[in-house]
Length: 277
Image (tube, rainbow, N blue to C red; front, side, top):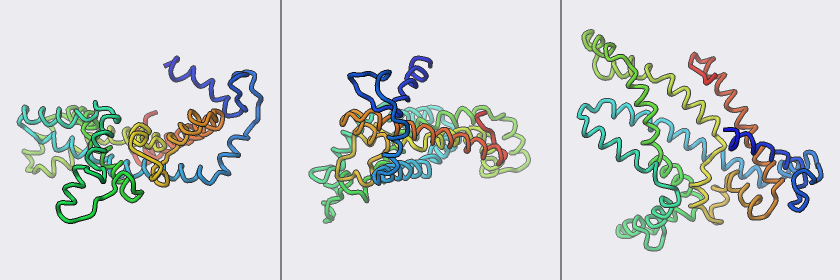
């Protein structure tokens, strides 16, 4: 924790210095908020910020409920062998890197000889530019992220479901409650705390739109809709050598994330839920 999370925080000072690699961090001159002024006056900064928020919110809107639904469905399966088999199958994509998945997606979705477009072409339609069109690229990101991570996300909710007292279900069945009633009045309230905490954590990472996924899939043709803060930081920091500007952008992102997690935690408590602290 100290080595990887706290020690690197010293590098934040780069955001307030005109860093020269020959002079080092200590001897580089202070420039105050020069880099922040440059960022906020750059129209492209607004573009990458909007792209980051857009992709993250779409992931949250469509991706957050999927693990909950999967966990509820798995909880209703009574055949243990079938249940464990399904769990294993939906967990596996999480352990495959985005480098490999990006390669698979490119084989499937390219307009020239991609398997999906071959099927589309067999029905007499034009190939769909999933990887080169701004209209299709973001939905493809959201769907592929759900397919990769939704199964792994069910672990938290299955653990919460396992903590519900079985006697509650037995009592409800004696009182005449059907499966829907038990789901609504016992199962869902039983995992509300887990849902609340996971939602807060998801909101805190709203500016993390998935660097690994996008970096391995995007190209200049879709920069307008898919270039996010992290990929922009990579380009201006590592490729262009503008370390101070990249640090300023990264610090801006971290401050916004901190504000969001504090607000989300407060709102969760106001609505009667459970916060992280």
